[in-house]
Length: 365
Image (cartoon, rainbow, N blue to C red; front, side):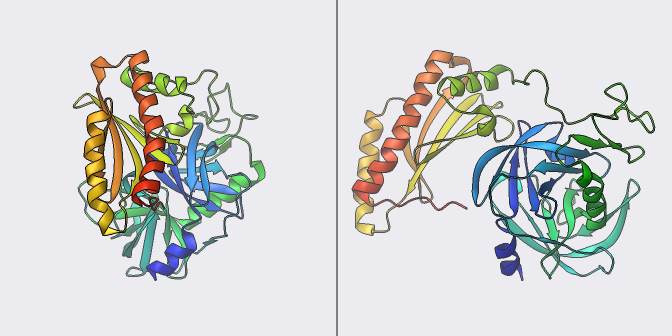
């Protein structure tokens, strides 16, 4: 069952990233919208999305719903994504088999099989589907799917310390929200968490109150000035900007960025606990010809004596080119030189290792 569902859903699952974290969404073709959790977009009017059959791009947040923890995003342009069906909540029962799909911990696509522990667990006045398939950080916003390959819920949260205990918002709440927003598609909106009224730019009271009940609300509108990070994160982004990288597309969550240079993928992280900034360029993978492995190792060791502030290493089957800097030592000019060297050498070594040592392209999901 799991393999069939993976094949059916893999192109409809969307990875979402903001300055504050990562999550999952799924594309509903009938409404031309990406569904995710409100806590995934977390007050961001624009997020980065990526899928199996399209590269990273920016997406506007059109609808937020704090009460039901739902958000709808603009779908990717000019991308063919197959239709996935919304199922029915009525008729579900304890013990039914389900599959939770998402991008746990920011990794690529995965599916976890489980069963419904309780079909109508009540929390804050709403019914939730309790399942024994773990919903991990990054998995939030993905679909909960039944054995017929139909979406029956939106993965929402897990109780801290509760292993193998996850909760999904039933599909009937999702369907109601989609139908409520559909006539206003392409307009920023938020659903009042007090009275469920759909607040739009045309009816919001004094730009911050629900016109129906007076509760303070916030539309997911683009700010007049872009919110920028501070400290070391700002320095890193200034360096990347100077090197011509798109910062919004590069962001992968808190203190994490990803850029491409030629055929190489480079991940940059800042660890505020040990104060190090690390750049890892994932090149190619080890050759399949065993006779070429020893010459490759010799070459990597020799190159490490020649590379300036860069180190070549092997992580599992991946060949990685890395740089490391202490946060207090980073300057704009020095950081530009170090990262520029990393980016250029990454593309250079990726081609050289494949041409001269038979290394192979990395397998990416």
